[in-house]
Length: 84
Image 1 (cartoon, helix red, strand yellow):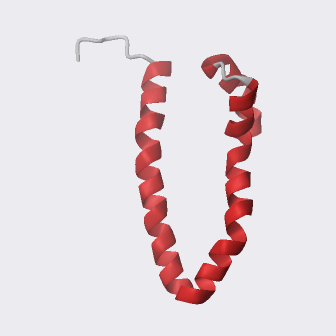
Image 2: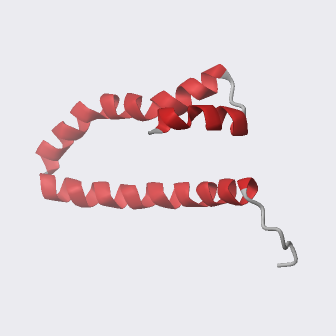
């Protein structure tokens, strides 16, 4: 889905070619790099505990993404009435 948004991302954010490469590929790099280690960790501490910890980490990640997403939305679509 992200690859469909690359033209819009490029037009709006104007990333360098290196930044655009990182935007599109960092997710896959991190998943591939952590897959075996997380499988081994799940075997060591138990899959249920691993799932609970992973959901907690997802919550922290969401908390870091939502403010930046909201600021991008507000910058992209400014409110016409700025008296608020």
